[in-house]
Length: 316
Image (cartoon, rainbow, N blue to C red; front, top):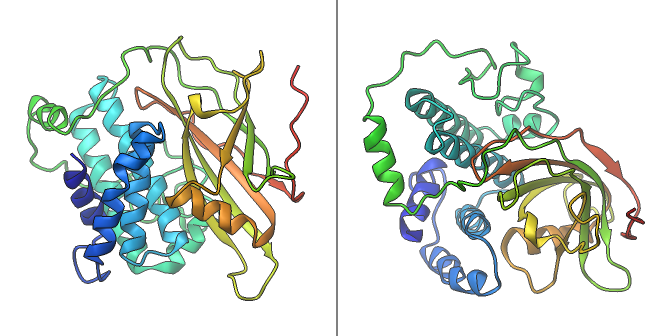
């Protein structure tokens, strides 16, 4: 399964072609991490995200491109889950998959596109706000590179049953307990070092409106700024994904205030974010939530947090 996933991740970003020189040994080392991540209790979604980002870094992707790719692939996973849950027609799923793939290929070739996207993408179509001529398009609408609804004719495609057959042989699953409404919007609160320990914590509010047992994933994106040294870029944007059960807040109100922890023993994107956090003073945080059926209410409004340390809020 993971070998197939590696190939899909590579093809999506054209790193099997001339865009990147792929380090085979690096990819093999990344694949060797899979059983380790599993032994650490990481979810299937986390393992796939860690593996995907490791492949990107093996191909020489910058942190900014990795952030763009992570968001696009978060969308691809979300659309696939919606399709498997009968919430998205097959033709629309295929069009959206091609849409994200095309934009990923542009991101590989156009660093300015990625940098503009990091400054804002309000309607979440992977088109930077500064280049979006049709703001406010619905989230499941394929768009052109100028953000307007695509007029491309649907391609010739396999039947819905054939697509689902492929998914079933790739171990793709949809949580049958996620039959409720869209997840509520999460609100980031703060992120900082867990004094006096070397961990890095991220805190957010998310009133859980999902049925009991429904799987929830949090994609957290942080733009680091106000660098401590000229040896690092002026800003760096990174993303990580956590499953809800990884929250360290076990209080009675733990279903509202989530605390996620990055540790020195982590690897992949989590370790990269932990190390990067020590090199900057300010953090701008946003988050979006996806349930096990692929439904998401979209990105939160970003908040800026300038304090270096994380002190637990008094949760009522």
